[in-house]
Length: 281
Image (cartoon, rainbow, N blue to C red; front, side, top):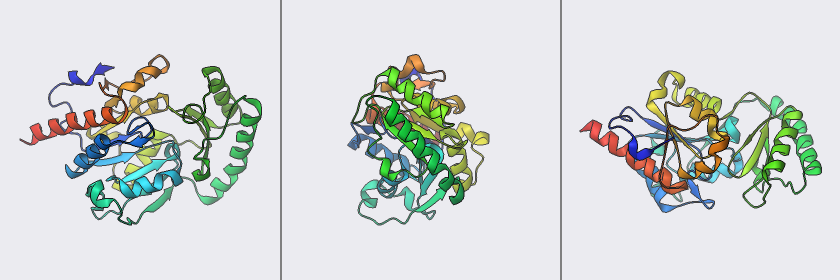
């Protein structure tokens, strides 16, 4: 991971869109700060497409999909998405969108029958985790989840690494995929993940083959569940707080910001916009 300040001139001159994690990447202490929100506005006003991809639930994501100047939010690690209108409204600044009842569409990767079939196994696994792992609790946002389960390890509760590892083991023992974010341990059924979800929404929403156009996109993240994105994106950035996960990262971002969380996202946005302005003369 190289400091973002070492990015060569023109390295991002072809970037036209950003995928980003949410918790501890866009947010700081659970909230989107003014600098990160302003950065989203500036990116949208420059004509860039921004799509958050998060492990958070689809229900939790809805107000942000309405308020932020983003084209979509992919939730539950790629399973489901809120999509903003395709008529250009997503390019409006967040200040103009605030209070506006923006119509959204919900897209799923799995059909209703598959989701219903998976629900029983997800609930069974959650019950086993709560029974077998001391101190384990469901994430407080669990009521908004439709396709996965989440155990809190650092948001409102604390699990040490040994218990985090045990939760992951149980989820995988029960046939689930499991990843660890900066706040939750997520488990789900299906072959989707953040990368596959990004490819899906790019194809469904924008009509593009993301792997074929990967040089035109950038990803920003902060934790181990972003590794699949760091692996595939030519242009990748970790906000500075990713360093606490560095020993656990097999795939790392190419660059790391000086600022943490939302300040790091804003730092990335200013560097990107500066390179684009320079390229456009």
